[in-house]
Length: 507
Image (cartoon, rainbow, N blue to C red; front, side, top):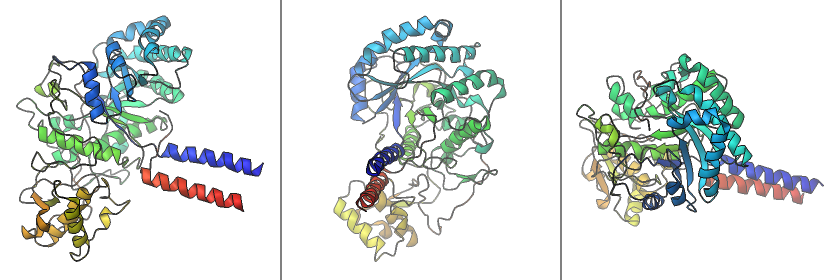
């Protein structure tokens, strides 16, 4: 009996451990407001080639649903604002839609979320009152079909739903939306559905560049912004905006609702006044975003907590109205050629000769590893710098700020630069047998700060920079807090636990 209990307990704990180990994911938004787009099958092939496992679409197009069948890709589908009225009025409308648009394709097509309406607080007309009734009817339809535990129901928001987002700890929902938000949050908490938000540091920088630095918006700041209420340090605007949502939820006693980012990104082209909309900045933002998310860094207020993020968007969409930037958020042109290169694994490095991955600082240079160098040459340079070169290589050790991405090129880059800066930042100090490359693009990311000549890499505080973001211009699973550990840590944790259980069983 005791042994049987221990077995059940051990199994439960192992399952719990693997639940903790579920990490953050990066997905893509597949909008189709454009001419000459590839067929859905070709778009899905493009997505699969990038090893993207989560996709958001904005409707329930049957051809799209069929194209994703048997791919293993999780799909978030949408009910547009134009359909809120019929869905909110009659349960039969939701039942019919589910029967015709979802049930025939599930589970071959792995539909995981249904978004009912999009950014309704930014839409014209008073449609927000329709959202919760429509969500309720969709949920009831799912329950009748036995799918309510497998497909979550929610709706998306812009940051305009907040009245305050700076400092993050002062994050609060706009009281004018109280009549809509209270029943919505009650629904999400009751159904264990996530709060979905679209986060765009680009707009905050574009509309308030005097108060917001480009480096801070691009995950490239070399100094922190301090939240005066909590003392938490923020290295980027994305984290600050996410935490402002968490604090707003906590302020209304809904701190168990999970947050997911259903849109974020950076445009590669803009109108004349949108000078930050460049391929280089778009590449920098999305590359650093991916690294930040898949490393399970979490945010200062929720360290180590998993966060699922969808990048906007797969293709440029030439039919969208507004400024030029609105039509240039895509990673690809409709002919499937890349606007710029992005590595969705987060393990690669950005080619420093092709846009770099950070903005320049006047007169400052860094030394990084040549990504085309052989592994043996990089390893020899790394070993020499950490030995005879007297470089402190502890920051690239496991659990330290520069360990992730766990790649030879990344580790060598940090170590090469440290040696370079400590030895006068001369050309010869960056040689490393031809494997070192000088760049004026700051390679720092997240909490991994590359030193410069004369610096000691101490933490510095920035002046107060507002993290308040304007509502973005796009109109197109559990409620419990999740914490994640790196996969290798999870594996070790399971092994250690099973060993202790084996020992206790033999006693």
